[in-house]
Length: 92
Image (tube, rainbow, N blue to C red):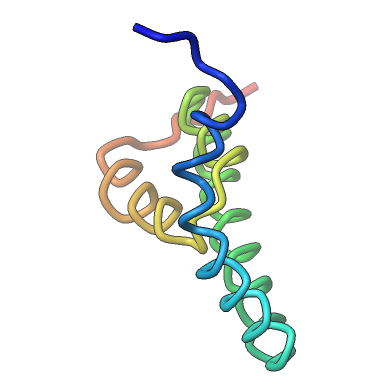
């Protein structure tokens, strides 16, 4: 197997550049949509991070914190994963 060079790594990514540029230009032309998507994503991310911290789901917390999926992963976590668990509150 030949060694991986810069061109062999960048070649698959080059096919996505026109699509990325198209999305970027569309979002620049529609700032209201950009603001809506940012607020939407932050809302769901905050909800999911809060819930995963309460349930001590460390791996979910890290995954949700790192990945940006426009709320899709966060909604999945909130409605399908975290509902199986409950927060136990200790009385002092």
